[in-house]
Amino acid sequence: MRIEVDWTRCDGHGLCARLLPEKVGLDEWGFPVIDTPEIGDDLVPHARRAVGACPALALRLVPG
Amino acid sequence: MLETHPTVSRLLTAPAGTPRHRNQDELVGLAQQVRLLGRGGAGFPVATKLAAMPRGRAVQVLVNGSESEPASQKDRTLMRQAPHLVLDGALLVARALDTRHVTVLVHDPGATDALTRAVRERSDASRVRVVAHAGGFVSGEVRAAIRLVDGAPAVPPGRRVLPHESGVGGAPTFASNVETFAQLALLSSLGADGYAAIGSAAEPGTTLLTLVGDVSGPGVVEVPTGLPLAALLPGQDTDPRPVLIGGYHGSWVSDIRDLRVERPGLREAGLPLNAGVVARLSNDTCALAEVVAVSTWLAGQSAGQCGPCFFGLPAVARDAYALLHGRPSTADLDRRVAQLPGRGACAHPDGAAMFIRTALTTMTAEVEEHRRHGTCGRPWLQELPTGPAPAVRSAS
Ligand code: SF4
Ligand code: SF4
Image (cartoon, rainbow over all chains, first blue to last red; front, side, top):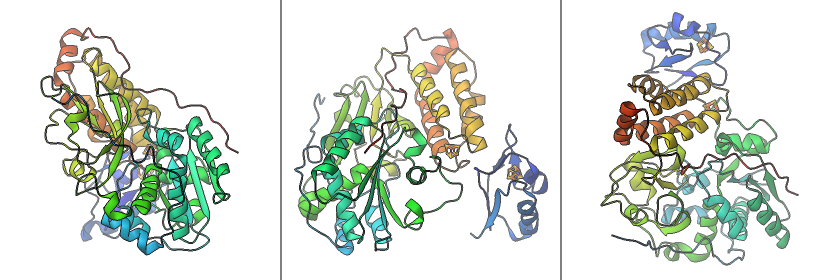
């Protein structure tokens, strides 16, 4: 799986970085920085939680 | 040293006249034989795009003549000088796809007038819509162009939708740059062999370029593909300077000796030709000021809907400005530029990052001069245009 940000929706709430710190860092304005978007099986539950928690509905888990 | 360059004139002087009808398979075959690539930004194979299209009355054809980058003039020149060839190409594609829906999106007033007149002059173009708009770099982006034609704000959508699936009015849309359509018209009239009689094997034919700054005759030229880039840049061997390939989303490169005007080869070298802008600065202007001006302009073109682009580009422009005035380190700028790519709904931050990053790596001597003295002593001559977009004109 891969995690994707819809940049037109993301408001920089930063919640994703708290719920998925293994994958998501934040830039100086609070927008996510994701160096490797591939999500290993072990992280999928955490990633799903982050997707569900994003208040802007900006995160998606996509196959691949 | 070449002081002149061999230009050709196929597109800009092509005789008007409806090219012979081709069905979709024939057109795909022709495009495949001459390896025709889109002439807007991405350089996607036309045959692949055309083959993916369904046919039928609902299908839309979108001719993208937005050309919002101020350095590029080739599309407006083509539309002004050969509007019928552009329409020939658009109608050729429309007929091959069994549709009559053709929209031409333009922002240059002269091009709008020429196209509107051309539509009136012919009997087969009564259904062609010419839509004039105010411009803006990002609206040149094809998905933004589609939204604009649909009356929505001209910004790219957040989700990656493909025009051939859902484009104008939600219908399957064949969208490409104006030059692509003109090339298709020419290809249909000349046939694959005639079309490929000039140019390189990898990308036969000709291409339009806009030459900017200290070049062999600034302006729009049509050249055979495969032409050594040095032919357009006299004196480069004795006085090597950074050359910008691919415009304001392109790259600066110092050593052009092995480079040819040909999209596949340039792409392999990591230097996409994009819309065909090639620029070189004279020794009289402050190169860093030129780069700062373009960086500022790029920041202003952010459609403002994606945070990393909206905040990142102005911050990078300010960092570049600080270097101009002698800031000792490029570390802030390097870090911020590295964070731009891949973090927007369109390729604008990626292209802007490429422009700025390669400018600073090829202009180290200039940066050093500014670091030491706070100036290089040369004035800013505005050799790289960043002019305002022309005002809106409505088309009938
Ligand atoms: S939680 Fe959602 S809105 Fe907040 S930074 Fe992450 S992606 Fe953006
Ligand atoms: S990346 Fe920038 S220019 Fe592109 S859509 Fe987002 S805000 Fe607009």
